Length: 142
Image (cartoon, rainbow, N blue to C red; front, top):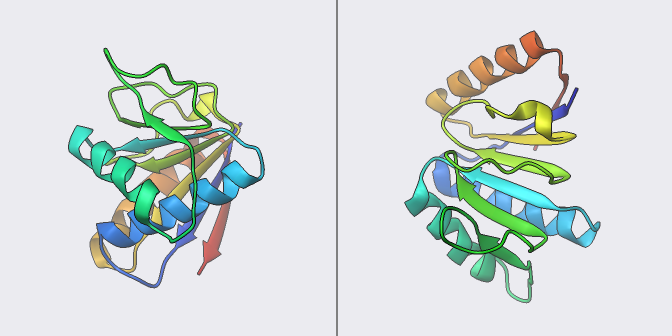
């Protein structure tokens, strides 16, 4: 079973989730973990790819987009939309529209929750889903 950490942000909006995902990926990378970031769609993956270069001055997170016909998936941090399986990483950062479909393939999963009503409602559904699957759940209010 995976450990699923819910990070509850005080901020609202998708940009807050993306910024936190970058910080979390950087921290995991510095701890020598491999990371897969799952986004809702290809444009969101491309946006996150750009953001990982610019989210903080002086940061360096080696990463690559993966998917059909692109990249090898050899970087410590990979980014893809939900249609691409990201097995084999130490951490999944899920920015997709629902709970990770392949949650059993990762030892750790990070779910990032924003303060807006929609974000909280979606996270409650995800929490219940992971609980039903028997994963270990932790909540961190930031």
